[in-house]
Image 1 (cartoon, helix red, strand yellow):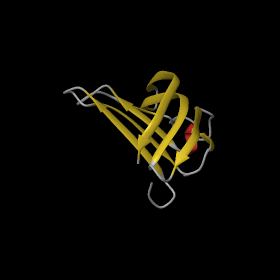
Image 2: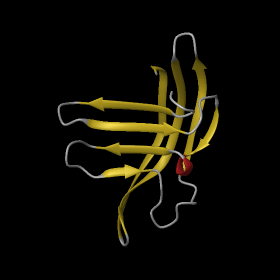
Image 3: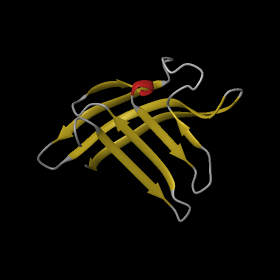
Image 4: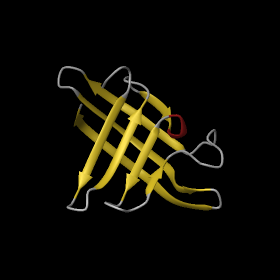
Length: 107
């Protein structure tokens, strides 16, 4: 957590598959995905999918729910789901993320 923003990033494998949650908040609650950021990449050179619809940045693309913040242990838990978008204009691909969970992640 830094300046009211909670960021969680996870990497997997040698190709650096990555998943990032950037939340404009540090307390339990629901946060709209399009006003925050969920991003995913399958690895080096792969497209990046983000929770902001390039055709309509105000569109509801999903939700991040922070369920617990433990300031003593500096951990955070929650759930998320969203539609991710990659590309611009008429060349936009989507990827659906459902039932995402993060539990006791150190910040």
